[in-house]
Amino acid sequence: MSLTLRQKIFLGYAVMISFTIIVGLYATWSLNALNKITTTVIYDDVAAQEKLAKLNDNILAQDLYEKRYLVFKDINADDIFRNRSSEFKSQIAEIKKIYPSFQNLLNDISVSHEGYNELFKKETHLIKNNNVREAENLSSTELKNNLDKILSLLKELEIKLKAQQTQHISKSNILGERAFIITITLNIVSILFGALFAYLITNNLSASIETLKDATYSIKSGNFDTMPEIKGADELADLAISFKEMSARLKELEATNLDANPLTKLPGNLAIEKELLTRLNENENFSFCLIDLDNFKAFSDRYGFAKGSDVLKWVGDILLEIVKTAGTDEDFLGHIGGDDFVIICAPERMESICKMIIDKFDKGIVKHYEPEDLERGYIVSIDRKDKPAIFPIMTISVAVVNTDRTVIRDPKDVAEKVAELKQYAKTFAKSLYVVDRRRST
Image 1 (tube, rainbow, N blue to C red):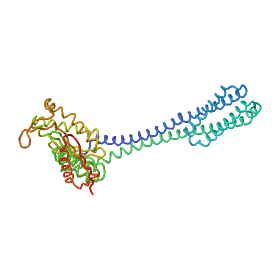
Image 2: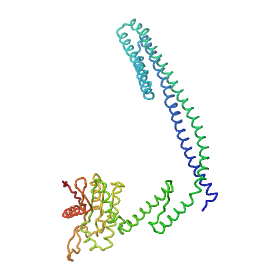
Image 3: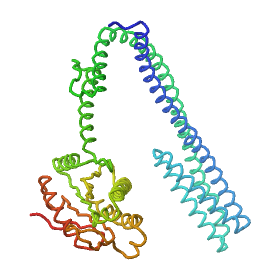
Image 4: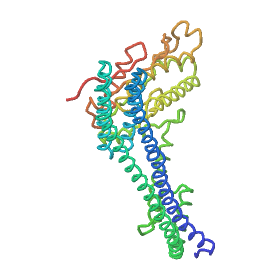
């Protein structure tokens, strides 16, 4: 069956759209790179230039207030000098963060500035001791020379910052030109390749699509065994393999659905056994938690089958909620049947899950009893010998086997150990969880 012209054009455009997306992604990457350079220029280069201007202002202000202190002996001038010195140091530290490559030059400026501050400190000491002439001499020689050196270093820093900014702008221009050329080239190639690809696929695509279409109808009708055979290593062959995998998975899900408990909709015995075998084969540590309701049969005999089903459905719901909140997607919840449930989880989550089960069950189970039975603290029902007997309010027992402490080779080992723990847990007249603490040798 040959494709129509409309279908051929559609396939050609599909390939062209794919190339257009590639062009768009490259253009986006280029714009992002340009944006980063622009951001560097605005937030780093310009900011550094502003800090450099403040550095010049601060050092000149220090010189001004040094002269004021020398002439007027103004204590406020001394304080302002030191404040300006702190601002100078802070701005030097900020520039170091922006441009680590200027570390050596900035260190030279810091050392010279420290020397300048020490000389001013020496000058103030001379003035306080009335050695004014010596202080004046210090100001006109060493302090001035140190100031000139700092200004010279700041000038050198300014030259480097401008060179860095020029380099960033040049890099931005080169990147923009290159992005423009490559984008145009990719667009032309995409059009040519799209047309060629559309022409080639029209010769062999229709048969493969028909085969896959037949496979879809087979799956729709419930036939999961007749799957497509498409030779090759292209996407259609991969799709045929995916159809087979999907069919196998659907077949498996159908079996699991038939195995699921009709009341709680939780996975049943087949799914539990498969999950257990999978984890044992992968040699991963896990906790197998068997959850059992104590005195459930007596409750069902007393209140009826429907009430018993409500309790089981409620327990299934709270267990599912606990696994979702306290567990992860890797944890498993199943319903063996009757009042027995199973949780398989990581050992480190086992304790918190068990505690939540007991807490939620004990708080919620009372809502399923009549007030007079709750007031008495027990119900009267029929025991296994068909005789009236007293049964306490339902409790919940959790028997736990950890594979990180106990050697487990097959599901039968788990069943035996957890059954033993369950019988032990039932000897207590309260809700609790019991963990096998024995280490296998």
